[in-house]
Amino acid sequence: MSIQDRFSQQDLQRIKDAVKDAESKISGEIVPVFVEKSSHYTIANYRAALIGAALVFVLIIIFDRYIPRLAVYDPVLIFTLVSLGGLAGAIKANYLNFVKRMMVSQTYMDAATFKRAQTAFLEEEVFNTRQRTGIMIFVSFFEHEVIVMADKGISKVVEQKEWDGMVKVIIENVKQDRITEGMVLAIKRCGELLLEKGFVVTPDDVNELRDDLRLE
Image (cartoon, rainbow, N blue to C red; front, side, top):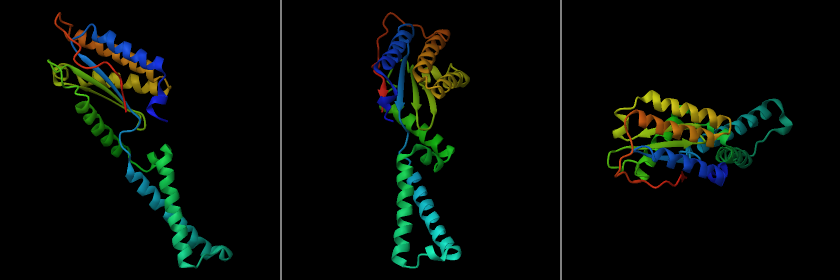
């Protein structure tokens, strides 16, 4: 599924309106970023290929030992069958997300997601505000992960447990296929939290970052 297929135009507008509403009351910038996956996870294709090739080779040995009439002795045919098994494994990992996830550890996905979030924070210039009050809400669907990154103007006064609460709200809604509702609630909470911490909109406040949603 492509990232665009996950949202209707109405969904995107609801999230965008939530950002505008929250930013109208605070001296901060909220940047939602959505990606389908944080990495291509090429290593998963290689691992699946090795497993596919190994399974075919084991079957050849089993047939040789226990089912002689199906045994294969031609070296060229053995090589071909093993290669096809590896190719089949790689193709499955490349196109089937559940297979790809089986080939990659959670720790590896966590690291890839955090690295991709850091890259997005820089690419979208979330740091580019006068008082360093940018907040990025990063959602990566393949990994089922959400990361909230706040610039130092906010992170120094907001405890991590507050961001963890927002992450929990979004993830719970994603599991119920209610990503839009989860994002709207989290964005609203961002606005409320910044108001509580004194980041009130000032007369000279300007919109420093574009309001468009980032879909990658």
